[in-house]
Length: 566
Ligand code: ADP
Image (tube, rainbow, N blue to C red):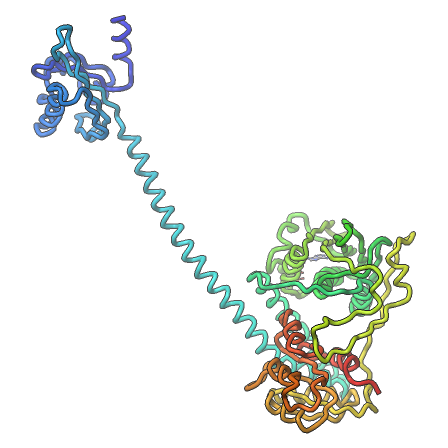
């Protein structure tokens, strides 16, 4: 067993030494010790620390030895002991010193065991340093996130303001151009005016996209929940796209599976927006051929369903390696297509976000040169059976007439399964006709502070056969006018100086105010085309809402709905 102890002492990777209790000279010194200190044991044995270490350090070691030997402590643990070695320079040891008694009970030897912890310590320190840096980086990242958050809020506000500022003159440009196009122009003038109108419209589309995108990013976009008829939405949609498709010699078709219910609840505007992006792209990237919309059910529950809309085209298709980029922002498959086809690269990114907001997904498949198929799903509510023929506006709106929308007779059958998919054809969209309101002799009050926009509105009304329009420039004047004159309808700008459209409406609806007719129909016109503004307008007591730039068609529709019948 002596041989065993010797073998262990010799081979253990710790420095082990034994010193005489009397004069602290080395009696045993192992191999790991030789390696650590860089001395041969033959040089060490019979000598003391004084022969190998600087005097101060030797004195320190020996003082510690004495503490143990004098019985102050049986075992002394020195967790971190710095020593200077001849070969390896500065080392850090963890040392334990133990008193060894002889058979007679007197102290005979001092046993020392040391582990070289230099490397471990370095690693620990490096780790600590890394941790410290990480903490610093985290603090910095948090600061930056807070700044970015603030910047993002500021950006959102900036965009909302900018959108408003841009829309107001755009109303002038688009409105005036529309009016100009109705006058006697020669061919060249007409072409120029049409270009102005088209450029104005595409600029507006871009402003809308940027605004939507920033709202989605700032998580400020909320969806509306309205009852709507999907077949009507699709019919109108196809009617609106038909001309564009026709111009490119594309056959635009829309087919719905027989089991798709048509009376749904959700945000029809956003649904249409995604469809518009997908079908718009399909037409843009197809020259001659077919664009087919297919409506089906991905899932059907008692109260809701997952609607699937797919748009297949026979166009240029998309290379496989570019597909991954498609739904990102400002991404276009080929920058050269921007020049050829136009576009901002925002459409699909917005569509993806909208589909996800509606609890659905978006996806695509494509074969280069053959065509593409884009699809999306959206979770929508189902309207209760039965009570579908009449849709009422929310009951809490004052001065609101019940609006009867008589749906096509075939509707009852529609919700039942039919044997074959049905084809949805374009419904001819109601277009405003010249003088369509002539003979109504309606008096209209227009509250609008911008002079160009006043002119646009007055000219549009005149064209519709409504020449009797009084114009005021703020809410106070509007109320004053309504106190003395019985107008049939008010067109109200929302952002006006002094008294804005909301507050003005509240005062008109207030039975305590001196306004003659508290129920006079009020149609808001606002350049704040943020969705959700509609709610604000209706909650303030307005009857309807049209966004600027005011299109003659939207104006005619709103007037048709709210002007007293003949
Ligand atoms: P853009 O406003 O540029 O159309 P989108 O986000 O809608 O932006 O589309 C991004 C890009 O995806 C397009 O520029 C086009 O390169 C490609 N793309 C989208 N739809 C189609 C399609 N149906 N066929 C071929 N390429 C398409």
